[in-house]
Amino acid sequence: MRPEEKREQVEERLPDIKRFLEQYKKQFLIGLGTVTMAGAVTFGGYQYIQAQSVPLYPVLVGDEVIGTVSDPDVVQNWLQKQYAAAREEAGRADLALTQAVTVSEPKWVYKGQSQDAEVLKVLKQKVAVQAKGVQLVIDGRPVAVVTDQESLDRLLGAYRQRYSGELARTPHTDRSARGNSRTVVKEVAFVQSVATREVAVDPDEVMEPQQVARLLEAGTLAGRKHTVREGESLWTIASRYDTTVQQLLENNPGLDENSRLQPGQELVVTAKVPLLSVRIVEETKEIQTVPFATEVVEEPAMLKGEQKVLREGKHGTKQVTYEVTKINGQIQTKRPIKEQIMEEPQNRVIAKGTKVVADRGSGVFRWPTVGGYISSRYGMRDGRLHAGIDIARPSSYSILAADNGRVVFAGWDGGYGKSVIIDHRNGYRTRYAHLSSINVRVGQVVERGQKIGVMGSTGHSTGTHLHFEVLKNGRPINPLEML
Ligand SMILES: [Zn+2]
Image (cartoon, rainbow, N blue to C red):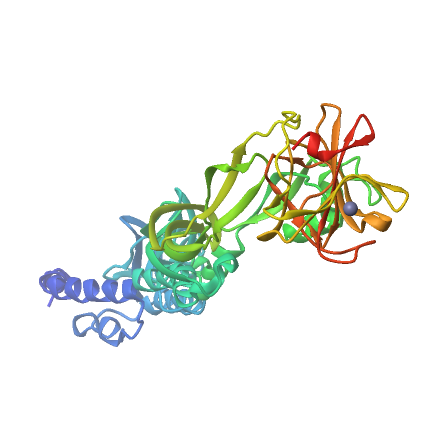
């Protein structure tokens, strides 16, 4: 058989070779590297070729031939090594080549020289193994790549749950309402826009989900202004922003450890800002006190300035439903959305006197007791002036003011015992002596007929009676002139 005939034979068999190579190529692409090349090398039809001819396998990257190799294994082994290295970095992620690598059917070349080393060099430059993954994009910024969508969804779900779930389980985190509140989480959402997309990246960029979670939480350090409040120090501010005094001093040139902070002063603080924040909206119910109000009833029978409690007040209770918005557990807003009275408060009712009494007497006196008779008259008695009248055996022991006026004495006065003096501000004063008790105080305005005390026998007295005096411009006169 002439060589030409052989070539025809070979070309007839090309479809077989192509099919094989296609399969071969596919194997490369998925990187399993388990193809046996024996068939290609010892392909029946080629064995007749003279020993001087060698097969050279063209290698293509995409459509471009980059050279020839002596054996497809040269390429396959290189690829396998790349895949193995990538596999270590990329975990479970799918791997792919940046460009297709194809080893074509061999050409038999007389004393041909392969370019194994050169081809590998070019491959290294042109081809890399990439990991397929899912990228997390927050507010348009790529943040991390994980192997698959499911891992990412799980990761984001857990991140969200940390805030919503935890709060739902412990409804008493709000100290102001401890023991009195009931909280239901209504809404959980990320503050930032969160998107995912499929990407192919360097295998070492693929991260474990736990790493990503830590990254999201750790966030970034951002400069922020803090306005100093009363009582704050560098130390308390540092601890509030989870930073150090040293860091604060670095942020704020001109400040040293001994600087006195003034309220209102602004400091640059560095605060940790998580890459991803969770906003939750919850509804919380609290039982609160409804304070009672005080109702005032005007009482014309009582003197102005006097008051009396008619009914004690009692606080009520209400259930207040708040809508609370929190970001990463920190309360942002809390607004009441519903109030329900559970127990109405009972108002306190007080009576306030409205009666205005003139402190000036009318000049017309009334009998200062309830009934009774004169047991001793005004005038000389045992060589001494009995400066008033004595009234005994009344039908009640109440002692009454003889006219409007102002109390100028109320207390013990030697032989008078417990006694009261009223100045009627018209030149007259009246004295009431030997009382068993006194109902008025100095300075008080009293009304004609108002009870000022109780009849008794205090001081120089031999029996229960009232000693009643009338003084005109300081001198005693016979009370009967006025009664
Ligand atoms: Zn007397």
